[in-house]
Length: 212
Image 1 (cartoon, rainbow, N blue to C red):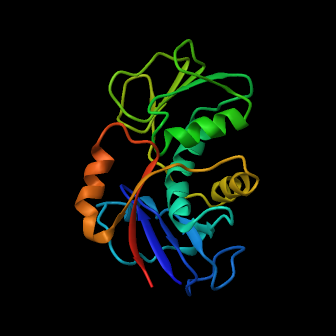
Image 2 (cartoon, rainbow, N blue to C red):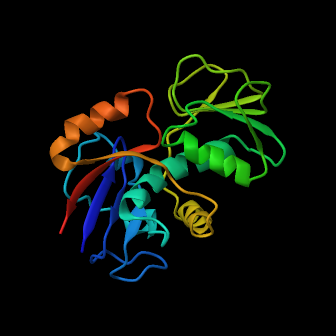
């Protein structure tokens, strides 16, 4: 069975066995996952198929379903780059993640703990990773993906094959698992986007493009 899945607001597809361009370390009929380059991310319109450059893809972790695999790259890469690339999180440091139950936040919490950091719900914090915007708690270093704020490092996630491999390795080792809030069929795309904008989500909202 072939499965195509697209997470909303940027992203990604985890396809079932299908012919794709050669992906490093992946067979020609393997299931893959990844996020498109920034230039291909907007507007976030669901379509049945998106041609992606092979270097932005990696093999789907064996422990994950296609839906879970769809939730991993966007949330996982965003969390990884926030904590380790822009936030320079080190072992033993205190990290506060706003929106910790969301699709990015819940992965950030898992990655931070795996790295030996202490995840706290209030300050003081060595690193604050803001995923939701609004008033941001104080921290020695502040990284945000929500909006540009004075004194904080704002960034947009970028595809990274090596980081995808690291995330997949943690998943297959049982150290990381993306949480799914809800799954919508393509015919309910509007409801899916409304869910993305709603508060109180726990994990990633996934739009299932089709099965066959």
